[in-house]
Length: 142
Image 1 (tube, one colour):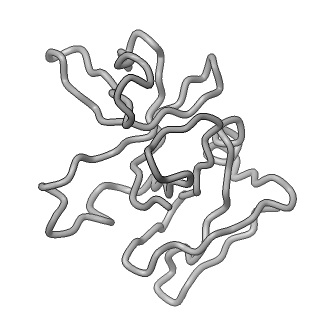
Image 2 (cartoon, helix red, strand yellow):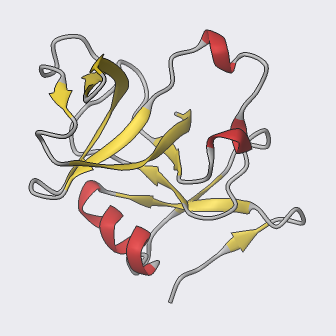
């Protein structure tokens, strides 16, 4: 059974902490592992549909270890500084059952790559050639 914690604005007050291999079941069926921990959504962030805290198996950032992923439309968490920051996206490989975080760069009109957050972690991944599936955007990290 999926535990949902909502606040008075009908947005999620807390989201589950998930590992890479638990994302697909959560997004498609709402399955949350038994005994999963939940962490509050920061007060300035909104998650109305599905969101979760990603605990990746590999280091993805210099300081952060947990990433709040929102599958909501972009405008939900847009602020006056959005144009000044790089947006960080979450994609997953269905073949490797692994989540990837990074910045999306447009190589040409038909090819986009996902560049890692830590320089040298891996080469930029061709989103289409690697069959990466879009999961959402990172809206908070800790």
